[in-house]
Image (cartoon, rainbow, N blue to C red):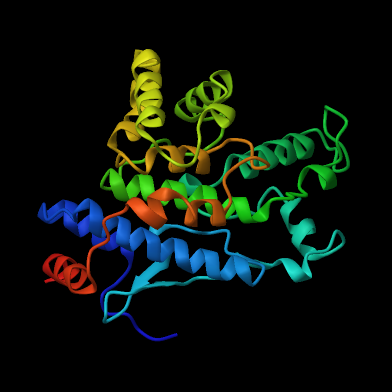
Length: 276
């Protein structure tokens, strides 16, 4: 692999925060679209990365982002019920992806596997599901979509995490978000293409639910750009079966029409000013 002297995307954002040289929203959206494009490409080849994070996008000499570190990736052409992929995921010691970027369905699997091992039962869980059935995640592509959403939140908030881990049992912040998502039926109420009416509804949701308990959780929504809010919330659907796909995000008004993308020269100037 070639050496990228400009480092990775996370380090760039961290340096921008330390130097107080913040990237503009249009530069951030431009760079996020490059991240999205890279994931869209590997998904078109039936490859799922499973460790999408800002650190895994390297910046080349032209300030183009390059997706790297495919150590956790899988080729869905090779996905088989009897393969080592499923067997490995039944092992509670295997941790796919980086904790803060990890999708909730993975955390649920780990909790179930851990409970089963603690109960000396490798074949079944307390609710009657076999471990094998539980760990068969049908929407592998959606793991990357969730991680991309977390990446954009970190990018928008200058690397402030919405929660430590998307685990309803161990992380109160995520449980609060999950309950809010389910109780308000956000999957059906939010439309991926943002209109003034849609954004007004999201703003009202934040206002109505802005108690002490939800304040920190919902802060990230307020920090998102106007056009990205509904898309990011659809990417954070806690149900992977109805979570937005990579193509849904790519085809959204935010990505295709409404983002005021910068020029490559503007991007280079912004990045180089931070890296000097």
